[in-house]
Image 1 (tube, one colour):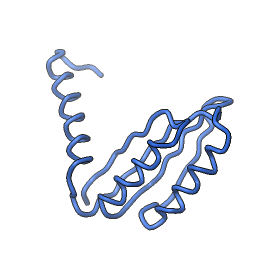
Image 2 (tube, one colour):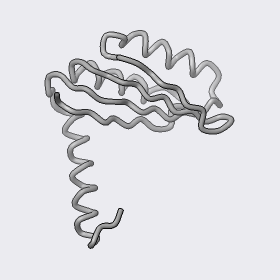
Image 3 (cartoon, one colour):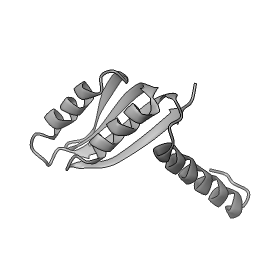
Image 4 (cartoon, helix red, strand yellow):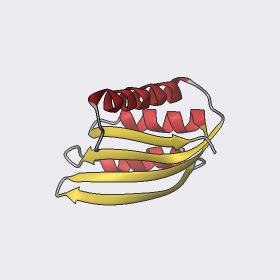
Length: 110
């Protein structure tokens, strides 16, 4: 990433971690962003479970994009806009699904 020194890189990484942690703890009102969900197709019925979660949170989901990364690995990009607590609940519901390997949130307060 072309940092001139390690301390700046570590500083930025820690700041990102703290911001993400604070987002998970606070109610910031309205947010806009994206939820990235990485999962493998090794668990039968996982796609249906993910779809059910998305339908449950349709009030904050604007759109989704599904990418096939490998034969059994997919990435779902979910555009979100709404109350922080609702987006937080969506991410927690996705994280709890067996077969979901990673969930990342990029959120901004508009």
